[in-house]
Length: 445
Image 1 (cartoon, rainbow, N blue to C red):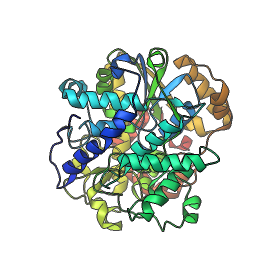
Image 2 (cartoon, rainbow, N blue to C red; image 1 turned 45 degrees about the vertical axis):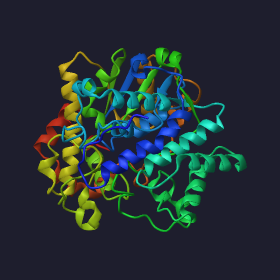
Image 3 (cartoon, one colour; image 1 turned 90 degrees about the vertical axis):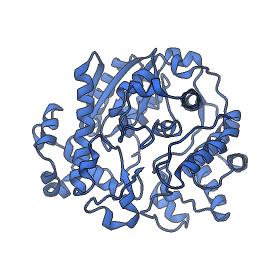
Image 4 (cartoon, one colour; image 1 turned 60 degrees about the vertical axis):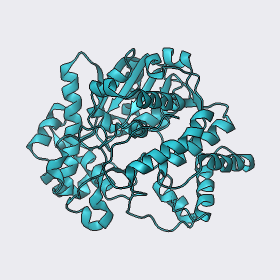
């Protein structure tokens, strides 16, 4: 196995990442892909570009029901971090990546990134493969708990045992069963860091959620994703289907993604949401027990955040825009407004540079009633050239369950903090809102 070299930025972190790469090596042998030179084989990419808490998870989960598209099982960030392209290893001081980062990747890191993506990209499986599912569960557990001495092969054995006795292939049940076993071994794992219903977790007697991050080193951001029955893409899929990539930080990586997939037609779905609703969602997320994204090398002093938990001063949540250094001591709502406008400004700048194949959808149209939702997805389907049929049609017509929600969805929920949010929406934020079609706040939902 080729060992990656990881820059030293914080005590203990590089050793933990190297140890994780070592532990994943046996899985790389077992989780083989039938695709060579993966990124060069991809012919079509759709980037869903939005702010965090802008609705991209809901759109992506709806699109997963279409068998005409390809997806990652979750987000691209873990693969970038394994390849040394996360903060602070990338050297940009933020989430920004550009084409030069692809050219500068060491051969071992490029190979690791390509091969790990090839093992993950695919579609939901009609006929589940129990062996692949068990190995995928093991990979995801290792990445979600990178500092724990987990043996991925032992985790795969545990998953196989659960599957043999399970009446159905329920990812939540498999995950909880494996977690119980690890917890009984004395390992500090907790289902509260997963995207699972809270009433279910309360019945599981795992205690209460902690505001602390699950560890010093995070490869995947909580709420953690559940492995699911999956069919990996083959070369024909990569030639014929569009790969959907959803990660809000990709607003700062569009040039990087074009270079990473050099033979692909790249299209950008610019998903917008009014600033008040998105900022409110960001604020709730910062105060949630998940969404830890970046462990900082210097402590934060963000008001209404760090005083709630000592550990918070080391964790920046959600995307890390260029210029974040000016907000390390700002009030939390100002940080959230900065994140919203920075992501959309980055997308607008990319679209302005052109030529870019882009489509803009307003999240308000997707939650404003069945007729508006159906019309929006019909427009998106026509643009992508995919049929609106089968499970996809059902999801569009009837909606889906909330994804990674911090509270029960409710139209206009931001109005509970209207005065506070209004003060955080400064002239720069309102200028971006105007460009996105949100000049009149009376229409914000």
